[in-house]
Amino acid sequence: MATLNETEIRERLKTMPEWSLVGSAIYRKFTFPSFLPAIAFVNKIAEAAESANHHPDITINYNQVGISLSTHSQSGVTEKDFRLAEAIDKLHGSGS
Image (cartoon, rainbow, N blue to C red; front, side):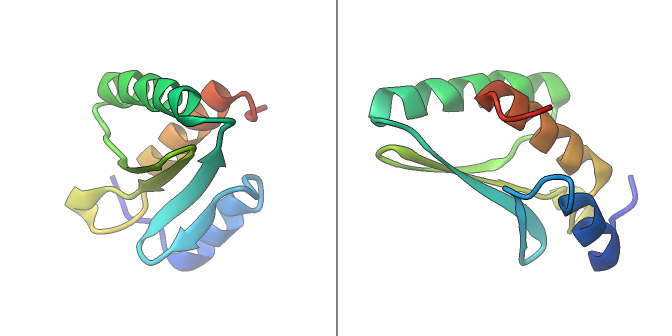
């Protein structure tokens, strides 16, 4: 799968305003009322990621979950990252 260039990534991000380009990845932070809902969300992401065979970098800071997506084998962002980002948004209830 081909790596997207910065212009292509920024164009795609216009439809996903909660996500941003950070380095060579797309990133979003989610905030929850407390720790357990954050962990439950991470578990849902883990299932979706495993099904897609595409695994994000995830950080958990109490009630905040950070998701960083890039296709490591391509050293950048691909369509695969956007597909998983859209799936994560839907899991969170913010996708269309």
